[in-house]
Image (tube, rainbow, N blue to C red; front, side, top):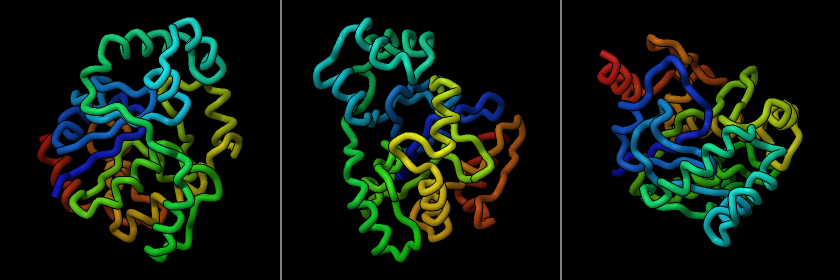
Length: 230
C-alpha cells in the first residue's frame, strides 16, 4: 500500500521534519504551500481551493490583481514572495488540481458509514477534503502532519494575517475549525488515518502531546521518528 502524507500549513521552526516528510510515497500540500520550509523537499501534489485554482491555474491573473484579491487575507510580503516562487516552480509539482471543497456532504456520508458521532456543519477546508478524497482509495494508508489536534492550540496557516487567524479560530469564516478538530481526532482514534505526526511539539528533541482522546502515536510513526532523528 502507498503511504500518503497530507501536510497542513502549520510551521515547525525547531523540530526537523524534512527527512520524515520525504520518506513517504505520496505527499499532498495545499493552496499557498511550498516545500523546503522544514516541511520536506519533495514538491508532491498541490491541492487548491476553488478561487485559488481559478486565479492561479484555470484563468491565471497577473501579480497586481493577485495582490489586490488576497491582500486582506495574506501578509503582503508572503504573498509577493509566493507568487514569484510559484511562477518559477509550478512545473515541479507532481500535480496541481482543484480539490472540490463543496463535496463536504459526501464526507459526512462517509463519516456516518464509519459510525462517527461527528460531522461537518460547514464546508470542509481543502486539507480535510483531501483527507477524505484519499480515504476513498483502499490502496492508500493515510498519514497527516501539521494539522491541529487540540482545542487549546491556535490553528495558524503560514502567511495568513493575525487578524484573520483570530477571526477563524473564534468561529468566523466559512469553515468550522472545532468540527474539523473533532473529526481528525476521531479518525485517528478509530484508525481510519494516522495523525500521530500532528502530536509533535515544536521542540528540538522528540516531544509528543497525545490527542484529545489521549490516543498514543502509532508504532510506525514512533519508529520513523526515532530512525530519522537518531
